[in-house]
Structure formats: C-alpha cells, structure tokens
Length: 294
Image 1: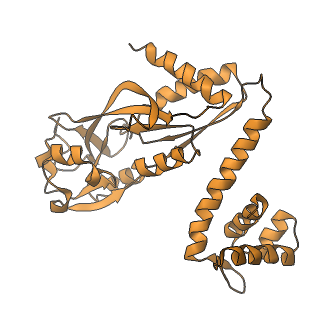
Image 2: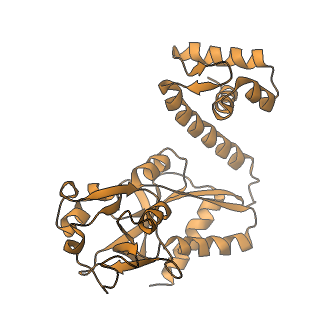
Image 3: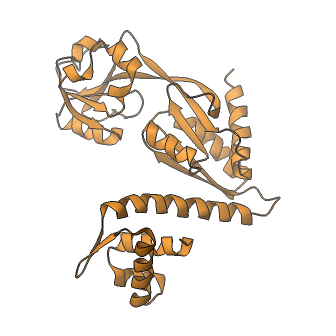
C-alpha cells in the first residue's frame, strides 16, 4: 500500500467520479481504475460501488477513507517538518479544542509567535473529547485544549487558571428568561438541548440532580452555533458554557446556574514525543503567558 495510491483513493472518494478524479490527478482513467482495483484486491474488500455516473463508498470504503486521511495527513506533516531547515522556526501547529472562550488565550500567544516567526501557521479543529484525544494519540494534533479532568499519566500538560461556567441559553421571550440565576431543577421539566457529551459526564449529572434518561432531551449538539439556532427557533433550552454565544443584539439570553457549576481546562500534548520547532516555541511562549497569571 503506497502513499501515492492512498491519495488516488481519496481523490476518487472526494470527486465521487473516476473520470474527474483522473483528470485532477493527471492520470488516464484506465490507469486510475487499475490502481483502485489493485488496492481492493490487496485488502480483499470492495471499497467502491461503481455506478454509471457516480461511485460511492461502501462501509469498508468509509472506514478506509478515515484511515487514509489520517495516514496522508501525518505523512505530509512529517515530510514538511523533515524538510524544514534546521535553524528555521516555521511549520504548522495543529490543536484540537473543545468549545471554550479560553481559546482566545491560545490565539493571543500564537499572534505573538507569528509576529516573531512568520512561517508558523496555526490550525484549530473543534470537536468532542473522544475525537480530539484520538487524533492527538495518533499524532495528528500537536496539542489539545481539553475541558475537565485529564489523564496525567498519559500527557504532558499545562493547567489554565480559568474556569467556564455552565448556564442556559434561551429565547428572550421564554418563561425563564427574566431570571438572574437558575437552579438545575428549574429546567428539569423543560425541553432541553444538550451537548452529546453531557449525559456521559458523571460529575455534571450528579450536580444536575437527575439522570438525563428522566429528562425531556429535545435535541443534542456538538457545535454551539447549531444549538443557538435551535434555541432561537424555540426548540428548547440549551445547556452550555458561558461566553460561547454573543447574545447582544439577538433574541437570545444566557442565564447562569446557581449554585454555580464550572469546569476547568488543560492544554495537553503526548508524553515522550519530540515536538517540532514550531510546537516547542509554542510550549515555551504559552508557559510564559500562563506564568503572567500567577
């Protein structure tokens, strides 16, 4: 299995058409078709369903696409880092992050780094905890900004001296919108829109006082912008962290919980892994920035 063939496979998966993919790759259609058939024969799996005008991925093809994307991405990153001149601080920094206002502190550090090292480029991918740590463990991310507890035996880490506060996002004309604070029991009987991670968070469920199986969960989300649209359309009350949605000038309002429930955050990276020059500079700069808050 060659990297070149993986790139051919991904091009066809993206274009959903062998002719268009061949044109994009500057190959003849028979050559590309033969490479794909050889790949399927190598695994003994059918990766594509071939129609007259469109090819679609099988279940095995969908699984292989994810793995191929990871392999190609890691190979390209490694090649770029190895070709980087020894004394030049440049390259890409990849960070996975849960949705939190604390990302602004990372952005401030990166802004300063880019003033000094214009060749550093910063890439942020949002996602839930399991997705982010899986990519970090595979070497696809340099860092993750994680909310809540972390496995300190597995990662190097820097704890951030900030905490995000839980509350409820709702329409301004909702019955609870005029309250200064809410208790968890105030929304037990309301249609709730919750992050798909919350029901599995034992600490949050214990604090909330009722298992989610006994609540009216109208919808779940993994991106808060989608949750805010659902709230604006009257679907329900969104449980989320503060400062993620700017409610000024909108039809929405955020009301925090009392007693207060907060969550901390930590920047983590793999132990026993030599960082790239750009990543090492980021660790140095971010550590100094965090020291300014102590």
